[in-house]
Amino acid sequence: MPGTDQWLVQLRKGIVELLILRLLRAKGEMHGYALVKELLSRGPFISGEGTVYPILRRLQSDGLLVSRWAETPTGPPRKYYLLSQSGCQFLVQADAEWETIVRSMSQIESEGQQ
Image (spheres, rainbow, N blue to C red):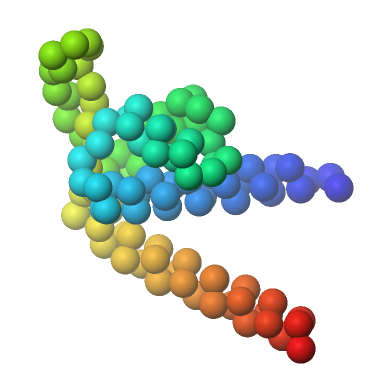
């Protein structure tokens, strides 16, 4: 069906953004590759690093994340990300919206089974 692939891409993109914000809230500061590994372990949401880093840059430019560079003992410096105050506030709103969506989908599904 024309357009469905693009629709699924956009849906996944929004979900990945929400997952990144939720991971940072749950685990605290993380570097980009750790976020990539977490997302890969949780399902087919991303295809690899090339999916996550542009999202991290956009979330940072939107003011939802802050970052810092840190030296590592065994390799190059890593960029660590953390939710900003605006990111925390946004996530409260996004969580409420997500719960509304899930509740509505569940209601429709249960109505179809009656």
